[in-house]
Image (cartoon, rainbow, N blue to C red):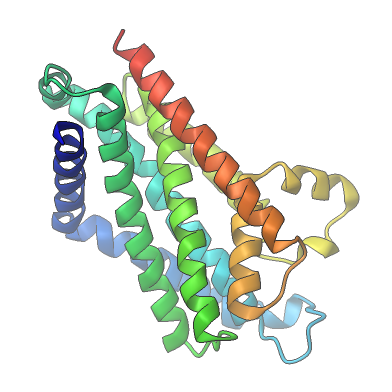
Length: 252
């Protein structure tokens, strides 16, 4: 019970920090709205889609949802560096709880924030006129959104555990996340990419998240849904294990 209470307490602290950061919240929401409105309506004619009756806005929406979740979750890992800087992390580490509970609380807190923002972007997609295939598909997509949130929050935590400065994290983070998004098939169909680029996209974990969301929301896919879910679960577990290991190592 002590471990669960520690996880809950850290989760609650991370969630309250996110709720009180109104400026950060608004900026993280406005960016995906910009992508949907400008690219969704402005570039639709320049991207050829083979599915009849499918607008580019509807095709783009799952990719933008995944992008917003990934960015929010990944950059949530920087909270470890801020906690180091202000001495809060030392206070947590002397508590009689395991490092796993600390990592779990932080990952859960950051993932919750990213997950909620993903739902908000999903709602904005509907307001912009996107019509998803079914209500059941929208509900099922929440599970994919949760997996993306956990995976990239754990990845961000693992990166932050190996650094000392928040500025370094921001620089490396932008260098890491932007290529992952552009190479995930979020902006154009994967089957239209050259063969060498397809190989790279299949090594990108976000590719499976985008394709799974697209399958459930608009019934358009290139990869098998079961494969996508399996790869996401495997990547999530691997990142949680890596994040816990590096967090322990950084404090050894």
